[in-house]
Image (cartoon, rainbow, N blue to C red; front, top):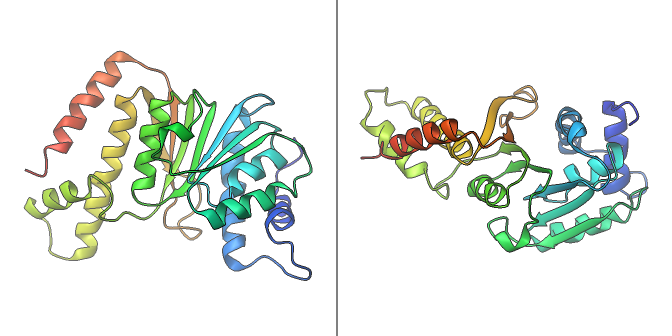
Length: 246
């Protein structure tokens, strides 16, 4: 693998996705390049020819296609439900310099039929709202070996959101909405972490870029280990946290 620089990430992003003559990367593209520059090195040790990478809730599949171009000619499965983004992904795939397999599946990440069995690595960059939770469920059900999950915005569609809101409403916390919202989001983060641990994953959570790049800058790094004692403890904690809403 050649040195992975921000310049090489930006140049590849432009070649695959921004092909109009004379155009340059927009501010949002440069932000995406910085995210990819941070995320791709975490993916590199787990990719090789013949290994399966799933780019889940993929958008244009910038994560998966860039990984194939800059890291390894792995087998890529793309799962994206929006037809226009699927089309953009296929157009970008045609610009690749390598012939690595790409299987683009127009489907919701909640559809287990769209998922391969036991992928080596699943990545979901900025899976919005409940999409992050569908990725957790599907990755666990299909026994993914590793998962890199970067959740995005949280809304009412997240199954645990109402419980978190009800719990914070009963706690003796200040009325300011910004304070209460951070507590609600913290509970949702805890719920997701416990679900992953109960499903057999060893989980670490940490920033992968600075918050100036994106406020949604936490990555859940998950490795399937299946330790029964850890799974049982997490399941018990999960039952407890889910009872907080009353």
